[in-house]
Length: 449
Image (cartoon, rainbow, N blue to C red; front, side, top):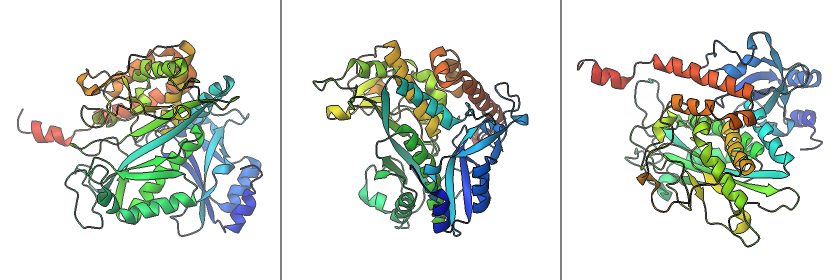
């Protein structure tokens, strides 16, 4: 948005407050809410600051208590509002705007453990090679009844019919229309925020929906997914229900994914490098897939970032369990859809809806770039169900982190300091989780053992 007059925009829209949003390691919006005039003053003087320890917060809101990658107790970092992301927040009664922020140290260096900077760093590595990746996310989520007791299982939300779905109605038009009131608010609020969403469909779970994004620049799409998740939650709350992007919110229903379609353009010619002049799959396309395969285990802490994430990855549940790829095969974790040569792409079906969009996109692109750099040959494409093969994806976060620890090339591409901070956050979350006594344990062990 070159030459954008943000001060004039704030005046014209009578903006009262500005929300400065920073995505943390889990993709949770952190930051500050400021009176509009204080925001403008701070912007001019570079005095908008937050502690660096924002990036060692766990999803529970607690800190990684023994950081070694950074010293957040004594360091403040400067918010750098990305002015082109300044948008009106449509669900607030008083005129409010939000802006996504990068963060930098006092000497101007970007904070390298910030997820948005991690994605920008991967994109710079593509740019150095004269390449530009293009992505299109697909995001699934559930609408559920308000749940005030975390020990109580979630229930599907009730739509306009007044009846709860007993089971999923995949691609059901009437089932999707049952939640038109919520969906209309989502579309309206996305339009206000210039979030470029496309189609909506009902997925396989009860009150489970999917919304697709139009293809575009990875950083812009990560920003849009970040804002979209917040928008959907707010639209649901308006209708007295919850929207959840948990990977597996219901015991016996499919989980929710964030599929990422990706292709790569030669910046000089504008040509999709995944297709040859004759319209066939190129060697670089196959190497890209090879990279996604080889580094998939190490990428799992970013594709499946929570202990709940691994409950989604079970056979016959619309979720991947292996590292195979296939031509238009939806059981494979890596799917090459039928498409015209200029639209040749690979769909990574592994990331969950709970993934931080900046990190899931960054890591998927990094794995593909490593595949092209290292000329990694993929396996042969599979035919038929991928579920007939053994489960080869990590079964737990511990296993995934162990694979990441041994992936030197991937760690270097993402940044060693970032990896240390991210692993510290995940280990702190697991330590907290291990202390929890579940309802299953009370049900089956209380009186039986």
